[in-house]
Amino acid sequence: MRFKQEPPHTHGTPAKTAVVLVNLGTPDAPTARAVRPYLKEFLSDPRVVEIPKALWWLILNAIILPFRSGKSAEKYASIWTGDGSPLQVHTARQAMLLRGYLGERGHQVEVVHAMRYGMPALPEVLDKLKSAGCDRILILPAYPQYSGTTTASVFDAVFSHYASVRNVPELRLVKHYHDHPGYVDALRQSVLAHWAQNGRAGKLVMSFHGVPKRTLLLGDPYHCECHKTARLLATQLGLRDGDYLVTFQSRFGKAEWLQPYTAPTLQKLAREGIQRVDVICPGFTGDCLETLEEINIEARHEFLAAGGSEFHYIACLNEAPAWISGLAGIAEQHLAGWPTRVTPSVHQEAARDAEAGKQRALALGANR
Image (cartoon, rainbow, N blue to C red; front, side, top):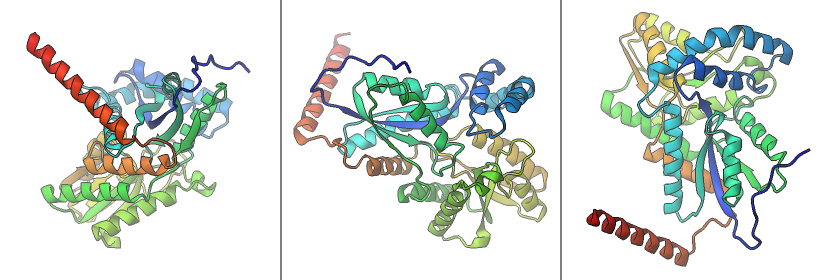
């Protein structure tokens, strides 16, 4: 095996600590040309599609990529912003804010974001952290509920990357936080804020990303963790069993996935006379294609077409202060024991440096 070239190492240099917030990924642009390589990387992951490799290669390259890339690009175009992909924007902002929150709590750590598929690519981010002297790295997936199709795939990518690294940093990996008080409370606050502004529907639909049913039968805990999140959130909101529903979206292919499916459930509610629904997607910590297009556009249309009157989508946690605070709490829990605390003298020096920099910037501005 050939190992990667190590960056220059100076003995006695204090090691740094980094947190890597890892999300699924997104194409670089809402075009078929940009979507195709992203889809190919995503759907080539054996964690995502468990079909014999040779058969799946033929299906993927001969059928799915030629026909689905353009359709997916249209969907991305419908939610693309001036700043780019919503998922990219929210993940980058979350990482930036997380660094600030951890700093305010006395932790001196680098915080960056990476994508499992697409850019910024996780291996490249890990290489940059190594070059920057980070020898302690916390991998924090943006998936509250563990699944082999998502969280484990991130872990695979991390281990695969370091298989060719001679000097491997100390690693910690966050498996899940589906029942973490900070996460559940952030969801609670988002729902209450929506209700305070828009009133409350008779049904709260909690839509999670779906996975094939066989993953549950083979031991994946995702289904159970989704339901636990839902129960905890319902309890925090004071909801009874009939006040909320758990559904699963984003079904792909002909195999049976976790049920009940979101879209048919919404249609059924409308036909039964439910005139208003509130829909939240607790499994997504940042708005993306699956929430903004699949739920807030497609599912909205299907509910209204089936006879419903009001469809209210409750936005993801995104950059909500309650969520960034909760995320900081999750990170702190897993950073415990690492020397990340800033000593008072170092903190004072950093404050003085920041003030000096501010004064220099003001002086430069005055001289222009």
